[in-house]
Image 1 (cartoon, one colour):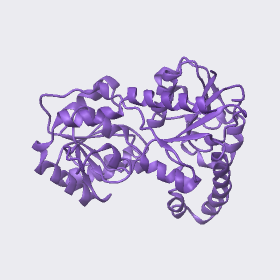
Image 2 (tube, rainbow, N blue to C red):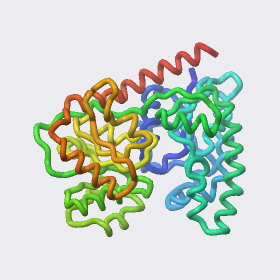
Image 3 (cartoon, rainbow, N blue to C red):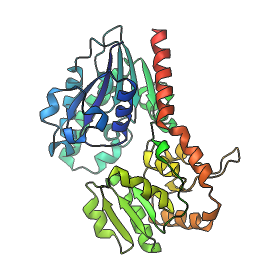
Length: 371
């Protein structure tokens, strides 16, 4: 069986790139297709593979890759130019326009949807509100075209997999497609339980606006709690400017040092509205509770008030405000001793990489038998 794995671009390292890396491990003979690639951002297990890029590869490179939206009308054209006609199975990792890759008539196309692109779907109105008059008019004209194209392209995909029930609702709303939930792979096997914990909270993320690290920082400023911030990104300068003396920025931390940070924290702080959220699951793999915004993917990865009576693995706060985060931290501290690390770790293991690979292979095998 000839397999092609299609991904928008390798221009940063994030959760979707981890999914592609694991897919490539599950299907080691697969070829990789993408719009653009920065070799420094290729996942480790993809660096010895042949990567086929589109005609946009020379445009979407640093520093232009930080401003991808001016090229949005070119995405459908570039995606349809990727030649996957000789493959029996197409596994596409959905990003802008990737559902429109042109498979041959007899091929099976299975799309893994992390989320419909926020700029022209669920955050469409918000993006417009942040633009000036001329830029907004241009954006709306372009988005109208690409939204219509993506909807039509989505109807050609044979099967749709999503990373959470949260995203399944978006796919149904915007594309009128039913989907199957297979949670992304998380390396929970690296987790271990530390016999003692240090007096710090932990945030680990790319430092972008949507991650809302600012809420965690400001809450810990006011409560005078120690917070370690791991990661880098466009917001780093602003976040450092608002940080008080109890906030420490560690930047990009080597992979071998991350387990110790997870294992020894009091709890993991997570204020983002995420499609899934890999870092909170990783923290739970070390038996550490999560203090999370009670919305989106967190509702599926953090167990709170379980109807079957199982122990909580964290605490939710209801709003993306500093006061709400502070309240979440204080409620956690009031019952900190009641959290059971062994139960938290056991909960995380349902999201392990091995579970993802088994479910994906079974889904693919079933789909191929039906065709």
